[in-house]
Image 1 (cartoon, rainbow, N blue to C red):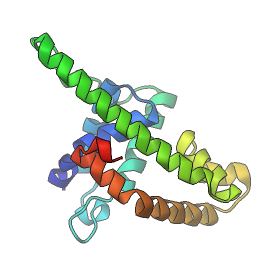
Image 2: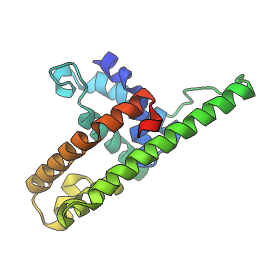
Image 3: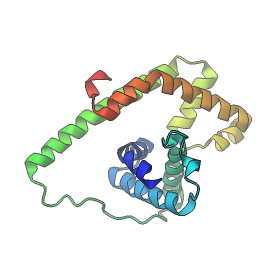
Image 4: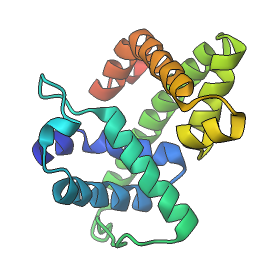
Length: 183
């Protein structure tokens, strides 16, 4: 199970960055998530699809909850420096920063496309999606605050995510493969 999780390590870090975490916190959260999965998920099928693909939504929710806990209740996670930057020559460091800028720009283009699509949706789906994606509210908190049933909100979000996956699957694959110009 951990082998499959580690294959998407950079995706998990990007998820944490999208929550608003800085790079070091994102790396710490991902490492803590690995430990949490190892300690608490005894049945690997719980986070895996039948074709040995990781259930990214399950990991997304886990990381998001860990980040929210970190921000609201203080750190109960061990913070440590994963990478030491000393000893890297300036030329390599400059190349690394430029590559990150290209990746960040491509990621931002992808996010803008997703938000552009959400803007074209019916008001209910648009407001629900933005409330979930742009705030720290869980589906349960949104249901409680809005008076709409959790089941209705869950089903709407599930359908919205299916639409987004279908529309942006190729762009996401291009991003993962480093084809930033195709996004």
